[in-house]
Length: 215
Image (cartoon, rainbow, N blue to C red; front, side, top):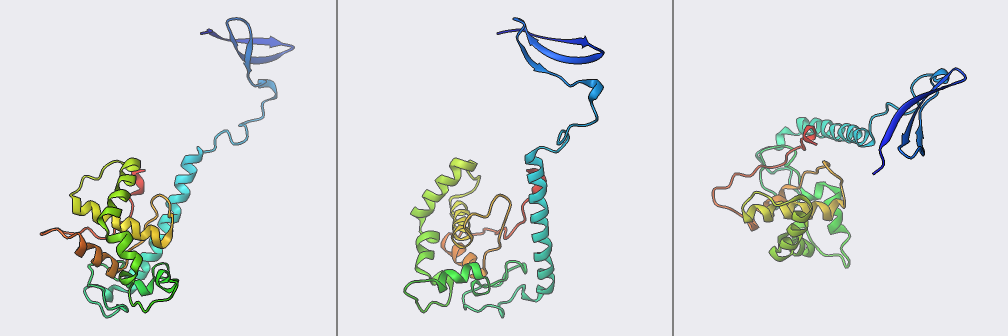
């Protein structure tokens, strides 16, 4: 390995910094201090990842404020199901979770786009819902993919199934959202998943916003 030498040279009143290897091959030349006019362009820009995180945080916080305003106006939904249009929703402890599949275009369009059309009143009756979100064999494979990328969940087997099923239905409805972008799942869908993978005495966490400060 060659040793690097750091030195200076003064030529015609101009000072240079340079880095040379031990065989005298010059590999980098510094700035002419007599012609230096200040910071170089972009020299003090934050790293790209930091800028990306700031943009993400702003986007998520903006989405969160919008949804929180909606929740304030719709607190009446909590604890009852008069808002349900599909007939399969259950009462939820928060307004953000108190929505029906027929109220959210991303979910209801899955039913509307069935070919051939079927007389279905709820996303949970869609033939693809049971196949992709309630089938334990499908969820086992989906969970293995998740574990490979993110590591294992410290959770019981039913909780692993529920978590994976939630991810499956969101991916089905929205495609790839990106990191820290979260969407509430309709009450009817959450209730169907919880019934399928129930645990006695289990207290469910419900919808939670991402903790951006941990990223």
